[in-house]
Length: 456
Ligand SMILES: [Zn+2]
Image 1 (cartoon, rainbow, N blue to C red):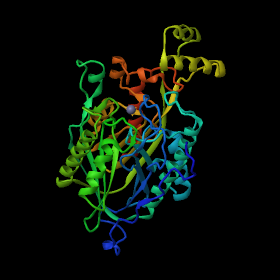
Image 2: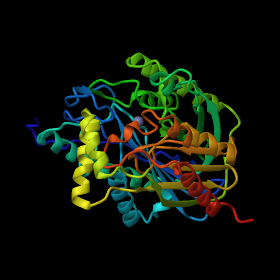
Image 3: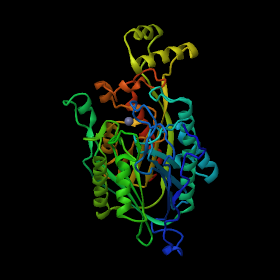
């Protein structure tokens, strides 16, 4: 399908040095910070399979809006540098991000705990994949070659974005504040039953990065909601893409980065038109402006960082006999899943019983805890951790470091449905997670918060 041999990327780095030279005489900003930011386009330049939905049956037909990988480097008063990487992408597994982390450690000396990757979970993005392609994406070999080429390019661009952000380090000030925006709707009420609790997290956490002259350099904004307003064959950033563009339009010269929260059980509703996606973008941008105009909390001191993988357990795997029986009364993706599990049993003699789940914590003194969770995390986790650690000082992101499955809370697991186990008919997973999953994850967060806390 691709007759020419063009690379799958516009190798365009959109932004270079952004920090003002006003404070060149100073080595650091008042809080001891240096910051640098970079924005690299990852817009595909040829038709490519799009990910997130299983119902698409052919590659992309065009580009509605450009998409990006962005990086923010923060050097604190101890000289340690931490890098936040955000991407207008979807289903980015550890197979994508770990090679980036390794290269950043080797090339720039950034330890694993000090680099974090978050995807917008943008369902209008190309498929990226290292290794096996899930059966919901029926690619032929030519389409697979496009995906592999694009994936390699994305990995290179992520390293490039991190490197440029580090190169751009210059004296800066940091501040944190929060707003609210009414975009997310609990989608389980729409897809299962209206009587379910409407649990959602509508907070809008904002990290403001200024140069020492007061000019905006970067605006990092979080929100917890699926980026599924659009579902056609045009590449775009969906509503988070429109939100970032809207904030950047209002604050020329500043890079805006979107961090996806624990929005696995939330959709922007209603949806499916470009106008609605743009409207959600405007709503989030308006909330960001409200926060920027409010009194924000200055961040001082150092970032303490920790990263670990903890084994989250699956429920007891079905036996060969149970799987054989299930073959008789399943169809579609469920049947393919049962067949796959039987093949795995033949090959390995057993099925997976746990998954190494990534948890990462960055603490900015007492003023802000950023908790980054892997997978598609439901809202309960964010609400529980913010209640525990402080609503005004805690930012909980999902979709970080490894997006591999839905992460239900105990409540959602008991309720069942798609996020509660129905979606676990993909990949090689033996079935739903064990009810202990929520406590295992929260215990690991607690351990990392303790480890990164101020010792006083
Ligand atoms: Zn999702």
